[in-house]
Length: 482
Image (cartoon, rainbow, N blue to C red; front, side, top):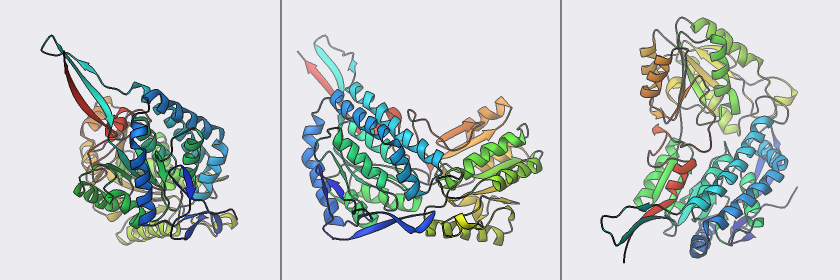
């Protein structure tokens, strides 16, 4: 058993004033304690905010290229430790090894990407109406950024919030998810070794009700970025806006893939299976609804069932699909399966806990497929956050579009079709922040905006790429007369 990990505050590794710690266990083997972290409180969070406030001026005045150098060096250190970080992610969150390794690489790429962006920040010169005026804009940091990140992408999401915040010259307080904080601690370690000044980044582990709430409500923080459930995110948004802070929230999804009559059923099943069962369905962009034209419905269902039943489920170290992250997440998925059967949907694949010695103690669930699903069923309306796909039959493309939009969420949506006119209509009419053609709903490029419509987002600011930098900067317009 290793020593409990500590919080990172003002450039030092410190214990919580509570003297309490919390264990993180392996979701593939819950009796195995992976690591122990600080169970912090409001005072620990407030101390982190104080450190970030004190460091504001120094980091704001650090030249962009120097900020970029530190980010680049941190990315290089993460790359050198990629195997170690992958093991931590598998052990705490449960992802299959290829998924975990890919996520770690994404974090590395994000740090390297924003390391170059840091040197480009500055502003733009504009033409003035008078001959003796120098008219230009300046991009400046907003201040102290409070970042609250989820467990399902425990290194990628913190990276895509943290790297642009630091590149833009903000200082940061960060609360990682309590059930998978290890990789964020390692990000802090890499930035510390790369020469980040004391207080610029502060990481505090502990409950959202204490640490997260203090970060949001503390008068020292200026902007809040939250990723998590819609229910919690809406409360975060209300609390942050009531306090007059800039805020972005990225929340849940009920993402459709519309399969047109021109689609190849096998290709469409591959796309839906990858989107619905990848990362054990624990992605806000996971495909949870396959909306299928009646002409290809039967063939598609047969192909999708085959994909579900052939998936190798077990510990992420050496299987295709890992466990759910916790007992509560597993229980929630199994409850939704019961609800679907109770509402009259037909279970055609999975639906239970897999058998076998390797999976008998972990939080495992079978990849699950339901047919005979109506759009008003809960299984078609509510986010399950597990490897469950509801297949809905439609008679034509218009009905399919209507069903795709018939939810409170609008994060990601895809269409599988050989008809370019249909593809263009889907792009135009799908109510989602991410729209894909002949591709799975999951998977994002790091240099383009990401965000949702409706209950999937606060619809205020986007993340990633230049849009991510926009959230962490504020423009000043200068009229220099001479």
